[in-house]
Length: 212
Image 1: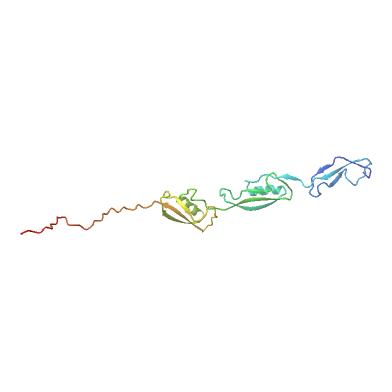
Image 2: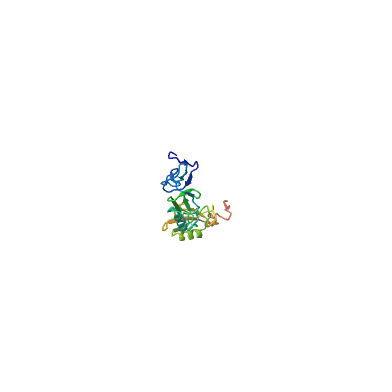
C-alpha cells in the first residue's frame, strides 16, 4: 500500500510444506515487475502443511497398508502386539496409530500393529474340558501332561477338578501341566461274617444226691 498498490481484502490460501501457516507465500500478480499505481495485489497465504484424514487399515494385510500409506508420503512403523486371539492371521493389522479419521500430513509416522500371538492356558475346570481335549491342547503346543485320578463322590467320573497351572498363564513349549480327574469311589465289601462264642452244655445238669 505504501508503494501505491491496493491490497485485496480477501487473501488466497494454499497449503505449503515450506512456508509456515499464516505467512505470505507470494503475491498475485508476482513481485518484481512494474505495475501501475492502484493495482490490486492479492496475497497468497500459507495454510501450513496439508492434512488429511487417515483411513482405517485394521484388517488389512500389513504389506498392502504399508504400500498405500507410503504413497501418501507417510512414514510407516510396523510393531508387534501381544494377543491371545489365535484366530487372527499373523499378517493382519490389528491396531493402528493414529486411529482412523484422525488428521495426518505428509511426513507423519503411522504405526501399524500386527499380532504376536500368545497362547494362554484355558480354565479346564470351569469350562468343563474333557481329558482328551486337554491332551489335544497339550500336544498342539508341546506341553507335557500329567494326569492324576482321585476317588471322589463330589464329581462325576472323568471331571477335571483341578489344574496345576492357572488359567490365563502363558503356555510355553516344553513346559508341563498336571490335572486331577475325578473317578468313582470303589465300593467297600460289607463283612457279613458272624462271630460265634464258645458253646455251653446243652444237657441238663442234675445236682441231687442219690439215695440208698
